[in-house]
Image (cartoon, rainbow, N blue to C red; front, top):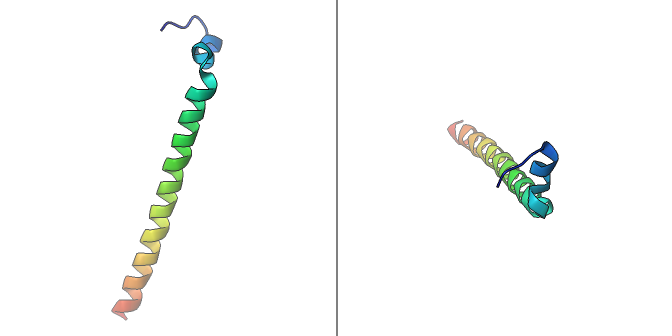
Length: 53
């Protein structure tokens, strides 16, 4: 597929809602996963510190 302008690229041949929505949902899921991992790591580290005392 060739795009002749930025507008054509963003329109994605009429499938812009599906394409950009998919990218948005994927990005949100990945960001949530990173936040959950960070939270889980903090809880584990706190438990290990309390156990060491």
